[in-house]
Image (cartoon, rainbow, N blue to C red; front, side):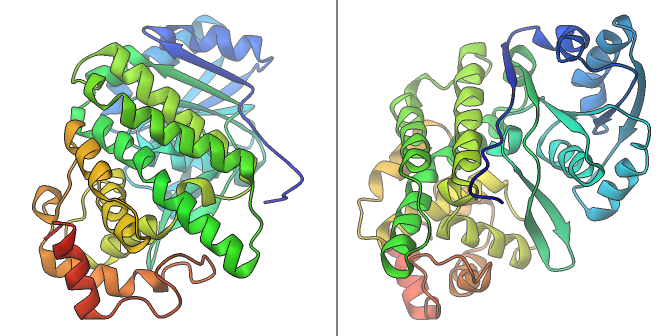
Length: 347
């Protein structure tokens, strides 16, 4: 990304029932004509149909496409529909939003993010996680021109998804520590403002841990705004550094190694517990905050065999080698990885 350019969402709408204003919002943003709505098999019913109806009421011609995974094949399928479209909307969870965002970026048209769950900070960030032959890659993309986050819909999503979003935000703590380390050792470009925003967001979600409850619209609103704030920090930095460090490398390693990985944010949260200890910090406050949010704090709660945790710790440094973290260039030995996981009570 060009470090001289900061690309942010132009308008952000959050609140109960706001999805019913999708058509009006798109009109006010001066879009017209044909739009493509990308959804998932489940999220079409949850939010897609309401968004489509609202768009049609405002005179838009709407085409809808369903995607099942965040792969380049799905991105290409969506991109093939965009020749005469003025706008793409992604109505769904992380996979739907990432596919719509990437397809819009490649086609050179605008994208609006309409999340139906708050499971990670891709809602407003200029990045898209897309599967390739070696796992999942975090790709540069354009930020959404708008975000329409219906907190009533998001509060009805499985609470596990909201807790995963919280854990993703909490993991900003270790991402910032890794970024500072790379800045000191390698003189990597560092943004004080992006780091401060990211860290403030993580601190705020931890302070509010007791208030994040299942089914509460207020909880959904808090987490959504925090995820958007984290995504904006990424835009300011011109990279995902404010929200992605060694804990994300650990999560991506698990995605490759574990037969049944957990949710992205869940894995990053557990990774942050261990990476905080590597940095010499007090890891217990991260574990305690995650526990209050009902997010996993160990291998058993992740549903992942301890052996895969150890293997991921020893291979995580090979993920995105250009991104320097506390894991260094050589990574952890098996003995060090096992000790780390045991000390932090992850296994």
